[in-house]
Length: 92
Ligand SMILES: [Zn+2]
Image (cartoon, rainbow, N blue to C red; front, side, top):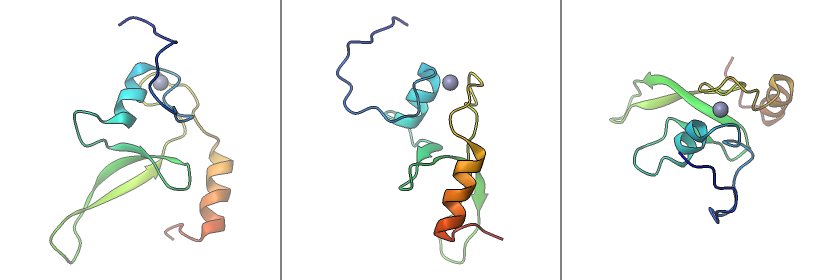
């Protein structure tokens, strides 16, 4: 795959700059991405499905601190933790 730094792919998120794999995984153009950036700007990865009371299964998300493809640190665990805690959405 050729490097093209001059492309106009629109506003790139702060994630996906370490490798094409992560970039494509987040973009999810041809599939439903299991990795996505939340409204809080945190990168999450779905680690599984959970059965809910209603029909559709829910995704269990977990913040990603290192790129699962190349191992680059993509966000700081302490920053993420502080942000999640401040929003009061930390389960348990
Ligand atoms: Zn990567």
